[in-house]
Image 1 (spheres, rainbow, N blue to C red):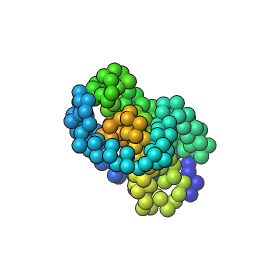
Image 2 (cartoon, rainbow, N blue to C red):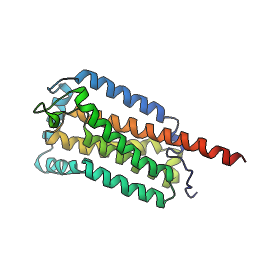
Image 3 (tube, one colour):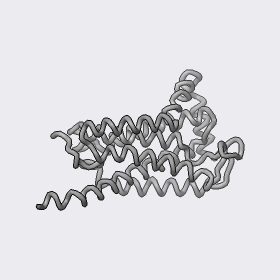
Image 4 (tube, one colour):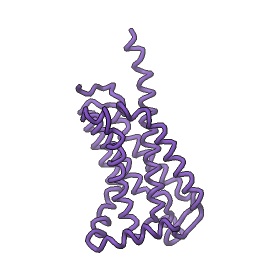
Length: 224
């Protein structure tokens, strides 16, 4: 079946679990934000993650450090715009809107929340605010878009592995960039988990809202 302009952002088996995934992401984010508010030290999870990343060796560590650029604001903006154009070419208008809204909301949220939560790493300046990781959030927001497009383009993914595809793509993007941020000392591991959760909550939450609004607009046309 060819996609149509009215195809939802969340197809098939993704729609039912999406609210639960959003709720879980918000809950994890809230717990971490409360636990590390105003803190400047590494917790047990952070120390364990530092040890694991350091054990990867120089070559792997260098690759992770290079991957950090994928989550940088200029790269995320460029990828989002290119993805929006691709979605329009594929007649996935809702996904094109999500390509702008999802990464945009994630970028604003991670920027605004940093000083409000007040966790720092290094110097206690604007550059030292650590939670949540904006680079990780940006990478995950793009990863989610790629996963949603794959689910839409591959019919087999609509009937079963949709959630697995979504999770794997988000984990790959967020895990790689997050590990790179830990490697270069820009974030603690829990900061990257916070960025991951923010992107998931805002990305999937925005997809649900876009689909709900679009469904209400097209319903009268379909019933006449």
